[in-house]
Amino acid sequence: MHSLASQLNQTIQRENPHVFHMLSHLGRLIYFPKEGILSQSAEAKAKAKKYNATIGIALEAGQPMHLKVIQDTLSAYNPKDIYEYAPPAGKPELRTAWRKKMIEEQPSLAAKSFGNPIVTNALTHGLSVVADLFADVGDSVIIPDKNWENYELTFSIRRGAEMVYYPLYNEEMSFNADGLREAILAQKGKGKAIVVLNFPNNPTGYTPGPEEGKQILAALKAGADEGINIVAVTDDAYFGLFFEDSLHESLFASLCDLHPRILPVKVDGATKEEYVWGFRVGFITYGGSADLLSALEQKTTGIIRATISSGPHPSQTFVLNALNSPDFLQQKQEKFEIMKGRANRVKAILDSGKYNDAWSYYPFNSGYFMCLKLSTVDAESLRTHLLEQYGVGTIALGQTDLRIAFSCIEEADLEELFELVYQGVKDLENKR
Image 1 (tube, one colour):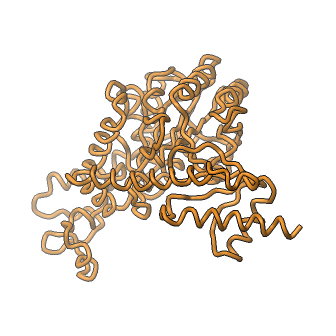
Image 2 (tube, helix red, strand yellow; image 1 turned 120 degrees about the vertical axis):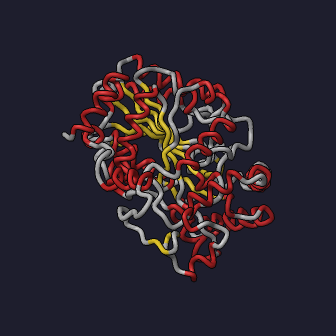
Image 3 (cartoon, helix red, strand yellow; image 1 turned 180 degrees about the horizontal axis):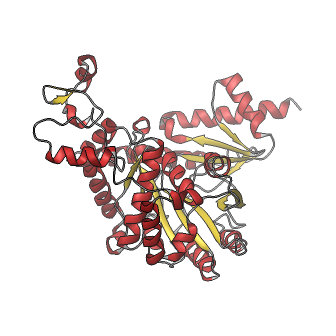
């Protein structure tokens, strides 16, 4: 084991031995090299006033070399803010701005001890970093039965972890905290669990209410009280898109001091929150003591250095400029109102009773999606029929569930969309 990795492990063991036992084999071995090209280049950048021949970029007239055909489309930006490599942990100014934004939007974070967000190549990369650091073969990853399919690729296929499922909804069609608690307590023999909390949920668009949030925290604490080390990951991809009286803050803040055996990890990003899907700018943030946070940050940066080296600089600059713009909050609110209008329109259409013979729907109050529960036809059969007969695209999940992304449909078109889905159901019923 490299001496730097050993030093980081000693720090983690001293600050919280439970977190050390959460680390995967790779997580214990990884470190960020303090000596080598990056550190020597950083030293040269500060001290080499005559010639700096260290870093692998090309310069011309004191600026990063670039092609006019590219710069012409990016003329509002200084070449140094788009062409140079961003640091492995991300553009420092962006990290600071995102942390400030987190506290402004989640006031309860102000009193918590949590780290500086580390820039990832969007949400999937952030989850992949979590998997690399904490998931080993046979470890349990607990997610609801209605989930984003990429979790299985990230944690199970890549890292060999075992997926443990519980029903998202209980009989009252609210969050199934009892199911979560049972899934966690079932891991007592392993002594470790990775719990992924994704709200607003993909695919259902559901966010728990305040009382349900307390029940979720109680379930996690119950597992920790039984001696289970829990990596509690809040996948906050759709954070802020809360349209009703659900939780309006991430559970990350409440997790930060919940129990010594619980490590809070927040994965979020500009991807969905700021409507910049192709920019691929995300963040990973840890809760804990200062020294623990420093060690985890270095291990995280080591994973980034070993995989993608660093994230794209231009999109980090674009997001930073947006966050610093005086028009940012107003423009974001305008888009929020559009999204809320679409969600409310969907609910009004479904609550009209017009389609009750064809489906019911799972509770939704946030995010980009909602799910129909089909009563009479198979979801995959309906999906393919809608696509081929009506040119309508939807997502089939299992036998009964059909996911509809109202986020990408104009409010004026939503009624026609559901009319076509209903017609598709009737077509299939008549073929029997």
